[in-house]
Image (cartoon, rainbow, N blue to C red; front, side, top):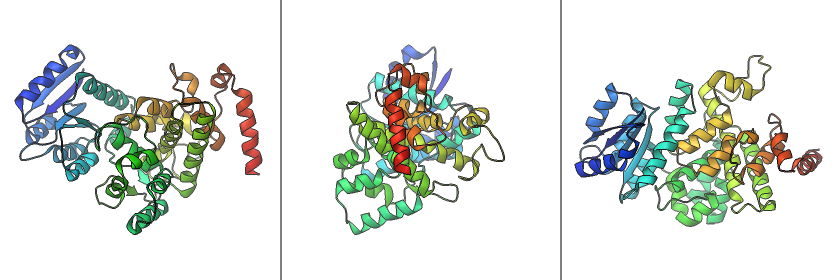
Length: 381
């Protein structure tokens, strides 16, 4: 049974939420509380899988409440459900909540958010890793790249398109922007979310709020964070995936690049959890592939971990699914069009990811892939 806690100071809203989810009472147990303090008291003594809170409440607003939930129970999924709110409240909510749903929210939107968040959380069987990932408000960014973006923003020296391309080089920023524009943090949800497109839609102010304000949504990496080499490989994967998606006629080719970028963040997540980029689970003389060691240690591989975080953060399903199956696409029952170019790009730029020839053969793409690999090797030499 999934345990859901609704917190709202309006009893009519709470009653409506119960009615909305009545059809799911055999799988979801719903508890309601009239405020943040009461919600925290309940959380202290009871198991909860997901908390859904109103934003505007007296004494303790939703952002403050969910921030405390994150501190005390980091493994709980956190969702803000609210009407209009000012920019400051939205930014605070974006660092405390995984998703932002706008009022009025219909039953299907609410059910989808619950199912996706809880299902993704359940795909991380290792409890400490699950708490770590669900507790994240941001992923680590390459220090030099983030400093470069900050300098450009402070000097106001680039166009919107140039800011977008610069942001696309940072996997952590790509995922954070995807989270913010895929749910309702900054307006109507968008399903195709390359940073350039997002900034053209929402303006450079979104980038300023992300990077220049001390709100926890973007952070420079410490010693356990991504290296310049990692950032470069992730960007190469994204560019190649986008180019191949154009070649294959994918409707929104940038989605393949976004998915490929997000997938690479799994390396950073596991490294930060383990304590350093040089301390992956496959270290200490382990001869197994890093992915086999991931599975043995945590119950999922690093790409699946990145995809779980993307789903928890409300990133569109086709992008999260592409990231999840990017290593073994033949295991995906309904592969999105973005999966083929993202898989090929990842194999081309990562020596530790073998080609899934079952998947390529089924699509008669093996010969094309071999041509691409030969050309890639020739360029590298």
